[in-house]
Length: 203
Image 1 (cartoon, rainbow, N blue to C red):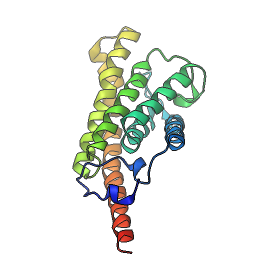
Image 2 (tube, one colour):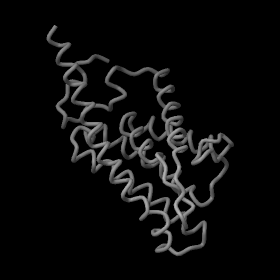
Image 3 (cartoon, one colour):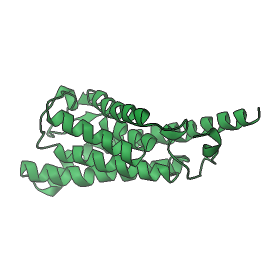
Image 4 (cartoon, one colour):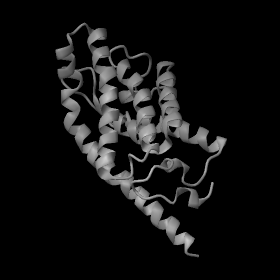
């Protein structure tokens, strides 16, 4: 795949970041495994939340960033590997845990869906402008909570209101900061790539 295939305006709608320099089966496998590993590493940044079985971690940011940079298929596949490998014993859930986490499993399932959603939105150009990137991150976070919070309520026997208080509200500020960081990071990366592409085309 050539550089000219990705000569896009920051608001354009061509491809995802991982494909700028081409694709191959080997690269796809490595990127997918790398995404799973990155989320596992981010999960080790875990801060307990009093009264909640859901710690504050770097997972959600890594999940959404993986989806946006790799696209829907590879992003979701990476999160599925992360989920299944952790459930089978790889100690890379939050704080080095493994096995099936009954209370927080909904969030892990939400990771797979959110990576697919953000990957699809990024492929349509939603990671090219800061305002669009905030929308992409908001949609991905909302999907994680849409699955994770009801699962938390069901698995622990608490009502949905209590689950929202324990599994959503404490994380909103952190999610907002992550969105702002992504809104700076992803469009800036595209801008640098486009400048490099156009610079090469002059020669």
